[in-house]
Amino acid sequence: MITLGIDLGTSAVKLALVGEDDTVLAATSRPLAVQRPAPGHSEQDPAAWWTATCEGLDELRARAGADLAETAAIALSGQMHGATLLDDHGAVLRPCILWNDGRAQAECAELEAAYPALHAECGNLAMPGFTAPKLLWVRRHEPALFARVAQVLLPKAWLALQLSGEAVEEMSDASGTLWLDVAGRRWSAGALAATGLSEAQMPRLVEGSAVAGELRAPWVRRWGFRRAPIIAGGAGDCAAGAVGVGAVHPGDAFVSLGTSGVLWATTAGFAPNPARAVHAFCHAVPGTWHQMGVLLNAASALAWWAGVCGRSEAELVQEAAALGDGGPVPFFAPYLAGERTPHNNTALRGGFAQLAPDTTRAAMTQAVLDGVAYALADCRQALADAGTQLAEASVIGGGARSAHWVQTLADVLGIPLHQVADSEHGGALGAARLARMAAGGGGLAIARAPRRLRSFEPRAGAQARHHEQHRRWQQLAPHAAALAAGAP
Image (tube, rainbow, N blue to C red; front, side, top):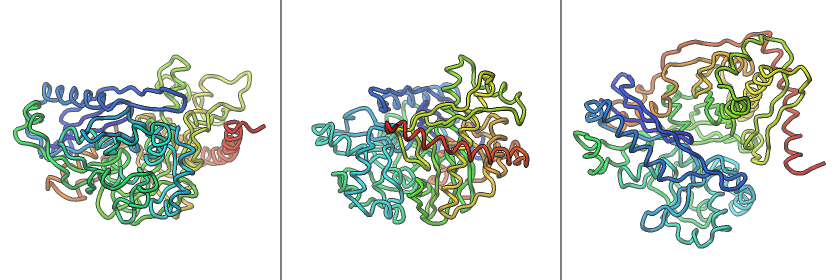
């Protein structure tokens, strides 16, 4: 059985045509741009998602048309939390407000006051990146437009609507709206009412491995499918990555070093810890949940530093690796666009500390790598406070390609980490696996762990040094918060 995974990310749409044995038969991607019309704002035009998807499918037909024609099922993974607003004719009302948009900070407190059961039912703090506060912001600042909102869709659900004509969402992505009763896996009437909305404005809910619709006839003809592929529920980007690396059983874990950073743990039940800004969501497979510590800045921090230096990321990491262990390295707070776990503060900003006249570019690069690793160590402690102890984890995302960064992270977290095959296709591969499940190609056994390419054990000396450095590094966040608040 051939399936197609489409991963709608923030920086690109990636497509992977996957065979029965998880062989990637063909893959492609198309870049996306982010618009920032005001400080703290982050938006995209949904039309750009559709254009990129169509161009990617056109390329797959040109390169692998015979395989594409045999596709039995399609599933999408996607960036979470985005607010895509439609009128009663299905037209997009405004650019989508993205997951890393910070404009709705004031509305978070308003939402928690309006619905005191939010933490217990939806399992998470109200954060500006989540969908519900964004709608309160629109209601306050764009009231005429808010009055015309007939439907709110997350990014991948809007893209699936274009493919199938059906407005459907699945549990993992829906968990990030703050409108889902996460334990009950259903929309929360109370949380919706607190934002001036109703269930009638929400898409139909399905499990990620369930059938959500089928490809519309015009697209079947355009891309040469022999029959209309079914479309599965799919998954939010992190849940799709989890399916891609086989993290579908309680105790499974992975680290994602993408634009954002994630420390993921699969759980058997709903286990929230909102006080520490831990995300407690449904998994994309039935009867399963997960916890996440989430960073707003991970590989994006290294990309920023590479842009400042005018060097490639690979070149900078190679310089840092040549430093060896034990040399003087400054501190870096990676809060370029605020932070979620454990601080929940979009106003935090990043910076270097403890610079000296002899500080080198290589040492500053290592500080960036360390800073992201220390932020993930904060996430690990937040998950531990919620009762989750990690024994080992796979590493996915662009940053996972760097052996030096993964070793640094293993030293900081104090657990073995594993580079795995096909990690660059993680979201699309996970979506393709969910598509296979929906098409009757098998159950959870499909979501097997990928081949390990290399494992990294924590090194005792480096672990001890990072433990002390992390303790000192943690002093940066209170100073960053005071600066953001204008405190003396």
